[in-house]
Image 1 (cartoon, one colour):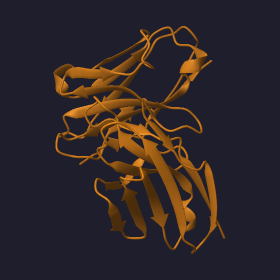
Image 2 (cartoon, chains in turn orange, red; image 1 turned 180 degrees about the vertical axis):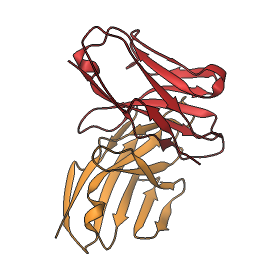
Image 3 (tube, one colour; image 1 turned 30 degrees about the horizontal axis):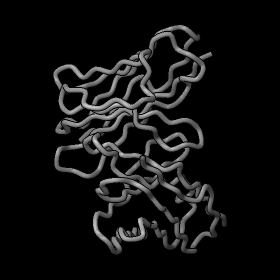
Length: 111
Length: 113
């Protein structure tokens, strides 16, 4: 089967850097995705890592180590609007590109 | 690009009634997905279409649930004989054949009373 583990809650101060870790177990790995979801809103795509290493998109970066079945999302220069839930996800086997999501990490950014 | 749209956004229904949700994917996307999400949880996969063919169904999709995608365009998700446990947000998403990214709609909130 598949499983993803990520911390349930993280709190950080505005302007700081926070790292959200994700470990996964899956057969047939096709990449690790990250999504952001504000309360009551739709999950929105942040980043995708198919290969080992760091992908940077503005204030957000994502890292993958396939040998460790591990990835993380790094958020820099935190802003209040970054308070949201963050989900890592891997592709479900035998489901086209459907994703299997972790339970999510609730990030609270405080002043 | 108008994004994925879902209708209705909110539905309150009495237990035992049937409800139907509609999803219009991004126009050039041939893959369409339905997910369910409850508070504090990640989206849970329900079913997946490629064009009009329903290729995968989760064990979460009981026989009270049925999804269709006629002509490979919009999709509907019907829940028959609703139960209180069906209360959740139902998310639709779409993707292209070439892409690794799926794009979600705003979701349809269902409350069964």
